[in-house]
Image: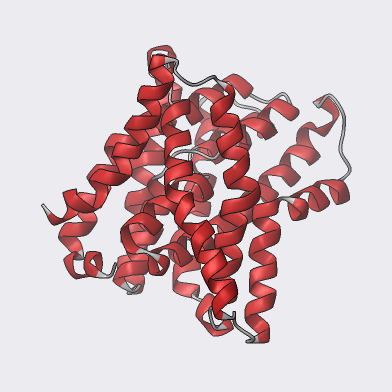
Amino acid sequence: MELINLIAPVFAVIVTGYAFSWTKLLSEETSDALVQFAVYVLIPAIMFYLIGQEEFANLLNFGFYISYGGTLLVVFVLLFFCLKVALNFQVASATVAAFAGVASNTALVALPVLHAIFGSKGALPAVLANLVVAILLLIMTAVLETTAGHKASTKTPIHKILLNVLKNPIIAATLLGVAYSFTGIGFSDAVSDYLELLSQALAAVALFAIGFTTSVRTIVQTGPLILFLTVVKLIVAPGFVLLAAHLIGLDPLWTIAATVSAAVPTAKNIFLLAKHYDQEPKLAAHIVSATSFLSVGTLIMWLFVLHHLYPNAFQLN
């Protein structure tokens, strides 16, 4: 009952967003506006605040990076070779499909979910998980540029790709937060109150937008490959992350955060890169939609599992 009371408001907001989308009371542009507000204002603010107020040593949680980032990298490699050998995918296509099976939407889903349940203590691991995903996406971009850049509508130089990644407001805020944390200056009460006020709006805005963009019709259109990658993304990958975190002896809160970050839907950036390089864009789009819809159920399942394993950690907020 305690866990239900914690997660019910989170998924109630998602359902509210879906209800408004279904009733057509709000225009289709509503979701775009909410996502832009979250990406350009709310998420950068909370990332800079959460990282900047921490001691720099607290950001060097190597157990988290290994259990989360290292495990996802292993799963990606296994998926890549499986797709390339069993289904004769080209390198670029296999890269897109494999990354769709591991790269999470940590910024718009894991961060507000963990922040809503655990407060700032749960949000910090999600922020670092977002940094891991950003690095994975950077690797994916480099591979696609090398193997399929000539097929893209316009070939983008590597240095411009790196610059575009660094100009992303979420990545920029994360890196600035790390730099500010290194100074050890901290925040005044006025600045803390301002950033805390912005962070409080993140959960409602992001979760409502997720529900608003969820499409049931996509599940009907999914084929065996999409369902396979969806199962890997929502069940297999989080399971391996949880196992790795347990074997490493990661702190319960960070173990929960790593597992939840792995269990959220596929990042939409996968589709954007697939579209740009013309490498399985429809497959990427369907995986994003399928994982977004099905994760509502699987994420609840993982939270119940985690609550059973680490009941005391859910009393932090």
